[in-house]
Image (cartoon, rainbow, N blue to C red; front, top):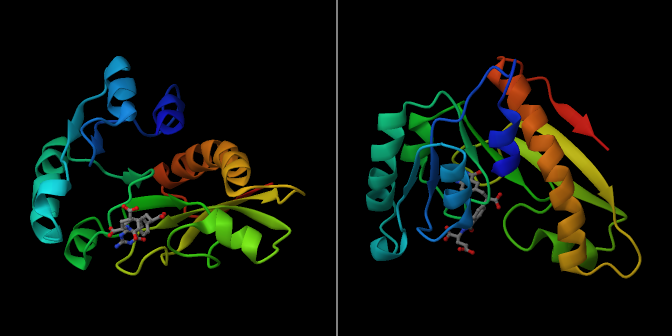
Length: 182
Ligand code: NHR
């Protein structure tokens, strides 16, 4: 998130208008506020499985901010088809695998378990099906001897911080040509 907001300066076609979290204690809210960006939080926990009710609360600050693009970054709540439809073609996610490999959770452990020699991250459009939308960019990293899921995750995260700003810059300029790094 910080890599994204810090990239939006100078001739960048976008500016951050809101940082929204499902965790009121998320450190990113402080880091956004320090940068003068509007913030909001909607705790998902009181909604307990009523995803539409949670999403109705998410919609309030979003509709007020009127974003042209939404970037999910570490957002871990599955979004319903209704929510996704509202932001169709305007919502991006970064997922820590070389999609279509390893949709869902625990991607680093799964790549190690499979004995993969490379791993990475993917930026994709958010569609109703999880981690399934059109691919807008990918960055690859090697898997090295002795890697643990944590060590591998850190190597991927460095690339996430390069890839997501590169994809957003293109996407905000209406260019959906995929970005491939590494
Ligand atoms: N929603 C839709 N409709 N489509 C996508 O592609 C989405 C999405 C919501 C989040 C991010 C994704 C990731 O990159 C994302 C993509 C969470 C889960 C999950 O199972 C799955 C994929 C992603 C994020 N969440 C559990 C849930 O019940 C909670 C898991 C937890 O809290 O640890 O929502 O990884």
